[in-house]
Amino acid sequence: GLMAGAGAPRVADLRSLYGLLRRPGVAALPALKQAFNAHLRKEGLALVSDDGADAAKTLVERLLSFRDQAEAVLVGAFNRDPAFAAAVKDAWEHFLNVKQNRPAELLAKYVDSKLRGQKGSTDTEVEATLDKVMVVFRYLHAKDVFEAFYKKDLAKRLLLGKSASFDLERAMISKLKNECGAAFTTKLEGMFKDIDLSRDLMAQYTQYQADRDASGAEAPPARPLEMAAQVLTTGYWPTYPPMELRLPPEIVFYQERFRNYYTNKYQGRRIEWQHFLGQCIVKANCFQKKKELSVSQLQTMVLVLFNEANSLIYKEILEQTGIEAGELRRTLQSLACGKARVLRKEPKGKEVADDDAFTINQEFTHKLYRIRINTIQLKETVEENEKTHEAVFRDRQYQVDAAIVRIMKSRKTLGHTQLMGELMSQLKFPAKPVDLKKRIESLIEREYLERDEDDSSRYNYLA
Image 1: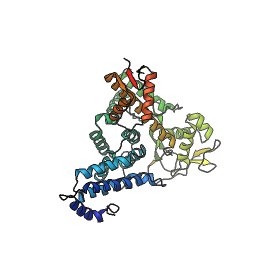
Image 2 (image 1 turned 90 degrees about the vertical axis):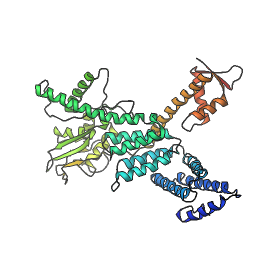
Image 3 (image 1 turned 135 degrees about the vertical axis):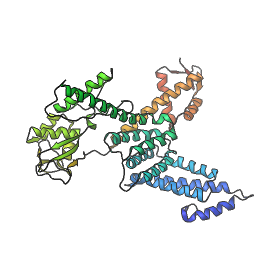
Image 4 (image 1 turned 30 degrees about the horizontal axis):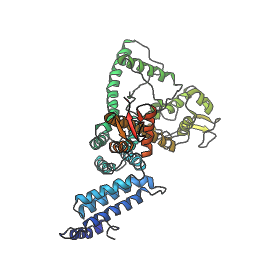
C-alpha cells in the first residue's frame, strides 16, 4: 500500500518505515528495497507498454515525471541510501529496455522538439529539461539508436534554420560527450564544425567573387542572385538520396561558379549538391503589393516557371523541373492549397491530378512583406524509421564483427560459450545470441575464423 502511493503524500510514511527497519537487530530493510524496486518496475512497464493513440507523444514527459517521483522518494524517504539508489537504477534499466529501440527513438524526438524551441520556454528551462532527459538517457541500452535519430534531427535543425539556440545545441552535445565519451559525439561535433567552416568559406568566396566582378573577369547572368552555400563533410551528416533536377539557368550558373572556386581551392574534393535542402528568398512583383517569399529550392523551381508562362499544367511542370512526381505534388499543394496560396489551381481541391492547371494568384494578399511558405512534408513514415533502424543494425554488425576478430586475434582459440560471454561484456548495445551466432558464421565464411576439427564448439583464428 505504501509503495502504491509512493507519491508526495506517502513519503513521510515511507521515511518513518525506513527509519524503523534500519534500526539495529531489524533485518527487513532488503525487503523494503525489493518492494521499492518491484513498484518501480511495475509502474515503469505500464508506462512503456502503453499502446494508446497518444501514448508515444506523451511517453517521455510521463517518464520524466515518473523519474522525478522516484527521485523524491529516494531522497525524501530513503535519504539517498546507496542500496535504494541501486534499486532505482536496476528498475529503470529493466523496464526502459523491454521495448528495446522504441524509448531511445522517442527520447531523441523529444529532445528535437525542445531544441526547436517552444513558446514561453526560456533557455534555462529547456536546459533543465535536457538535464532530466540525460538522467533517463543514462539507463538506455540502445544509445546508438538515440544517436542515429538525434543526428538526423540535428541535421534538419542546422540546415533548415530550425534550431532555437546554438548555445543549447552545443550544451546538449557537451552533455552527451560527458556521458558517453568523445567517440559518441565526433560526428555531431563535426556537423557544427562544418557550419562554422562554411560561414568562413562563404565570406572568402564573397570577397573573391566581388573582386572578380569588379574587374570584369566574367559577366553575371541577366538576373543576378545572391548565393550562400554550406559545405558538408559526407561522413558527418546523414545520407540524402541524390536528386536529378532541371535547374533554372541562373541557379546552374551560380552553382558552377562556386564549384569552380571550391575545387580550385581544395584540390581533389568533389561537390554534390543536395537540392532537397536548398532554401531561397524569391522577390514577387506579381501580386497587388510587392512581397518576398521564403521558400524551398523545389518551390522556387516551380515559381520561376511562371516568369515565362501564365498557366502550366502539372505534366508540364513535371517535365520542365524533373522533380519526382510525389515530391512535386506536395510542392504544388504547399503553393496552391496551403495557408499562403500564391498559385491558383483549377479545378479546386487538395489533391493534384495530372491535368490540373496552375496560374499565379494575382489576388493574393498578406499582412507581412516576407512570407514563409512551409513545405508539406510527409510525417516520418514507418519506412523512413525502418531505414534509420536498419542503418543502426548495419553499424552494429560491423561492431560485432570487429569485436569478434579483436577477441579471437588476442586469444587465437576459444570455445563458443567463452566467446559469447566476452562479446556480451564488450558490446555497448543489447545483442541477441542468435544475431551474434550469425556474425560468427559470417566470419567463418569469409575465412577470418574456422571451427576446430576436433571440437566443433571451438573456434580458431585465421591470421
